[in-house]
Image (cartoon, rainbow, N blue to C red; front, side):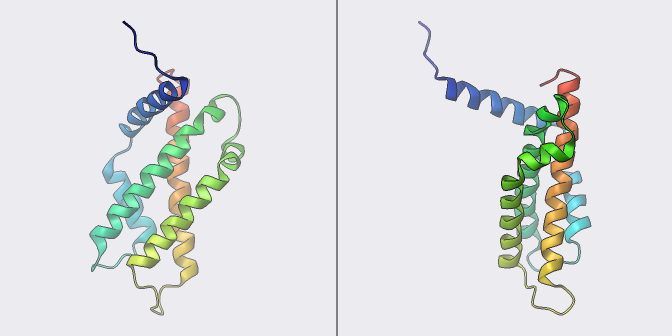
Length: 145
């Protein structure tokens, strides 16, 4: 006898399958390089591993968000207009990463400002969003979705 599966559950399973496929294309070394590039001055040696673990989580979320919206790029929208569609989610990721970094890292020193940390968070999330968007769009074009 066949089980009855709701449409919502079926969509959730399809989304999880797509996310797993997309995550195969993202390597941990790429994420670590991005963390070092954007947060090299912010992350100090004391709590570096805890901060890197959190940044990896945010990097994966931003990458998957870009991959999710890459469908619109495949359908003909530009990257900028697709990015405008997810401004709320992207802003939330940036704010949560900023709060996370301020919680774990001392930023009251004179060489690092709060604005610098926020801009680093913004560029970090945007770069990983773009990477997910580009790779997701490529998967759609190759019909690998």
